[in-house]
Amino acid sequence: MNKPTVLAPDRSATHLVLIPSYNPGRKVFETVQGARAQWNPVWVVVDGSNDGTAEALQAMAQEDSGLRVFVRPKNGGKGTAVLEGTEAALREGYTHVLTMDSDGQHPPDRIRDFMAASAANANSMVLGVPIFDASAPSVRVKGRRISNFWANVETAGAGIQDSLFGFRVYPAAPLARIMRSHLWMRRFDFDVEIVVRLSWSGVAAINLPAKVRYFTPAEGGVSHFKYLRDNVLLTSMHARLFVGFWLRLPLLLARRLRRH
Image (cartoon, rainbow, N blue to C red):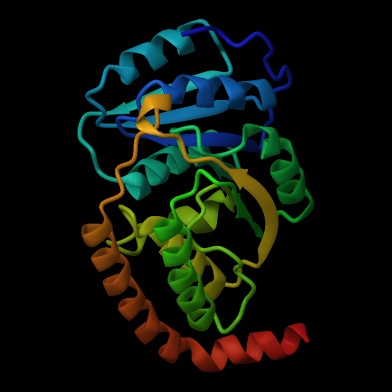
């Protein structure tokens, strides 16, 4: 594990990079180093990992004042890790968090562009739209189209181009408020449900492209996606959101008419 050779020097007082991490393997170190080369500060929430990465990340943080590592004793899911990090950010006066996965799939060289878009549109969420290469499994690429279709139905066409891609900037206060008021959005359902509910609350979406790379196990890639389990979770989530959509339909249509 090498230390980053270049670190982003200026600490932001409003925006931070938040990386939830669960048994990510060695790619997490490249992810953190890449993020730190682009931004300061970077926070990692280790969500009950037992692969030794927590200890190595803590050692990195001891040598880098721009890196902070939180360690949760038990795995609670991505949403749980993001909520814990976001609440800590709010307590310290931060207003926005950029989330990115710890497994190296997300592009750190897009961090500054996403942060700039967020700074210019502070009340909006900045959502990554994945640009896939040949490494992307076709079942994952095709499967996300279903979720994206339903997310746009459930928001009355609010402009969410990709509901699953976790490289995005959230306004921290509404994110935490919505998550505290619901028991869901704690695991694989987090990315989709939070953007739908933020949209319902009036948070507009700004969409920016970002390349995504899937790594093979030989390259250090680690996936915790379980096809049957996680698709059942997404199906039940969309059923729940569809009910909420009908209850909010008059408000959503009125909001859309005002925009036009």
